[in-house]
Length: 227
Image 1 (cartoon, rainbow, N blue to C red):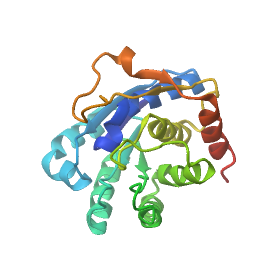
Image 2 (image 1 turned 90 degrees about the horizontal axis):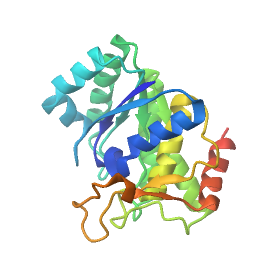
Image 3 (image 1 turned 180 degrees about the horizontal axis):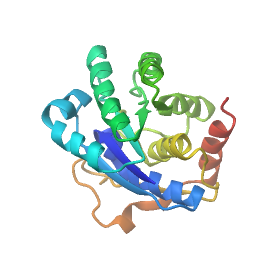
Image 4 (image 1 turned 90 degrees about the vertical axis):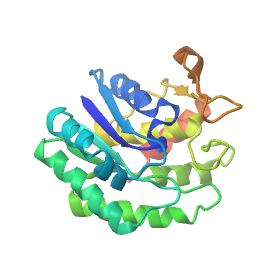
């Protein structure tokens, strides 16, 4: 399996695509490769205006099985821009037999009421284009209600913590592979420096740690019980 991620810091935070790769390998026993076009603060409009040739080349010649499409979220961008540029990426996916996956982002910690609007937008565009929908925001909301003590957010209240990115990767894994890794898969990544946002760990052994089993169990239960 080969997956391309297009997005911004909500994609690259804590090396989340690598966690998706490891979860898929664990869940399916099959090989998985991940690739990323993600730049801090950038929208899909930016990708299609400023980096169009990179997106085009990857999707037309990269032989990807899936493309995970993540729009700017904090704040949300113009709705028509989201629809227009998501459709452009989906059309490139279709021309190369790549399955498009819409990344449903989570709302800011201080503004949870934004989640309903995010869900509406992403559900609409997925339905209109026939793309798969990774309902990440939905499961963040559910996890927060089930156990508010689990901190899904990084200290800025917008980006994901290690637990938040574990849940994000878990939703993407189920959306793409149709299965979840075993609950014994508890590894998470935190690439942040406790003092500075823009200084991250370069020794990958230092960013890996195990989440509490009860946290992993809750996340699995939410996805397993979803109808």
